[in-house]
Image 1: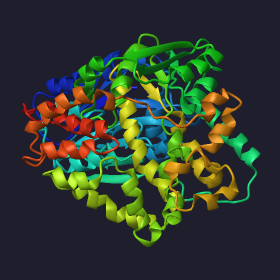
Image 2: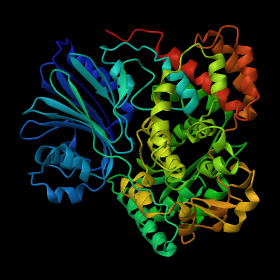
Image 3: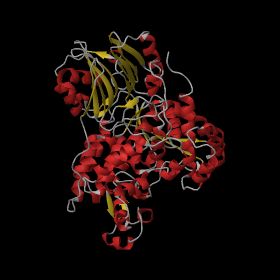
Image 4: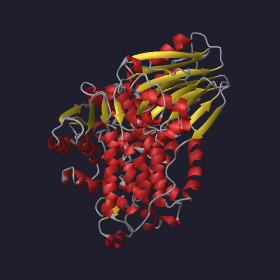
Length: 605
């Protein structure tokens, strides 16, 4: 796990050594173990900050060059690198997965290498023979990769701050992203909060020649199949599913440094902990909470059952607000959810004992864990909404965090990204059933916001997070092999008549079981108190801290030009009337803290 960066093209750029050093230094947290750079040719250079995970020796430092002069700088882990190594004829000098990736690119090409690799990664590869570079990102977008490009150069990095620290790009606020963020809590790829700086799309790679002409190639997408079968062997499917989950977790235990797990008290992290404990003695487990609200009780049940070395961390309100701006600066964006701050604090604590942590992101998207949203196809018909509006509009009303009416009433900025996605998604929804549409939407978009969160909050402390439930082979099996009825299962098939006129906020987890198959296989591993309790998010008591939050709101937002003049008091009142009042106001604070940090100074030199 590392931070990568580089400059490539035909521009006459002075002070290249200084620029790459500044880029690398801005990401020192991503790789404290080594720093290096490699000049490819005049005007082109690759750099890397290394967090050593596999083959800790100096010989595995990067950028890594082959005997033929091809160069790679790489961030991530290829979990099946030992299997790939057997298939690639190459004279290896290290035992690292980096060199296997380099050998695959050189010997078998990018398409073969990407199709065969199971992992999380972002890398840049220089092909000396063709004088071209490739920028590639893993299938789900677990690892970040940003880039700026013009007619004579491309600048790329794991973090936007590194691109800015090149001194070749000015920071200009992408105002279109404000509406996008307030709706989704993240900005969908390829866009960012910065004009001219983009994300490489997950499951894609860019081929860029020396004239900075770009070819964007998609190498992976979600399966075209989606299982809606009504007749199946539940026991057999459960067994195969459990085997996939176990393999996904086992793959992510490969490491030459200590590995631990988050243990939140929910079923996802608890199951990971249970299975991971088979591969490590005295596994370190971690949970963080607040005096006002926490899940310590349930995490302790699992920790005691598996005799882990368990760590409970408590965060206070003052500590929370004191760290908020710091975490924003690591992310180069407003935070998406309030729990990013406690996750960052927890990562700093766990770094004292471990370097790799397993986390439960992706389980809800895999098996329909958000009952209110994933039952929306049923509610759409059950409530007669199908006679009033299309399903996409109904889903978006449920999904978007801040209602469009608030954004439209109080923002001075436009919302072209809303239109950019609404039209194509409505068309895409027409090709599939609504049950399938919800799963595809969450895997294509929602999970990417979670991954931005987990990358920021771990890498700021030089910790690598691995997410077993986003193993691409597990996702493919879930689409093709698990019937919809085993993802969200009615407890009693005869109960549907009772639900006439009621929506999922009433019946979810009372009349049905979200993530049914995951719960079924978990009885072998976990206490039923953990398996059968209602889903609880990672609570941050913002509503209990409303007075402290309001002080930030009134102080910061009086200078927010992107809020309509003389509308601040009305905006505050509108937010406070919403069920998520604390978080809505918190999001506005995030935007302004971020804007002041990045856009009130010049970055060019």
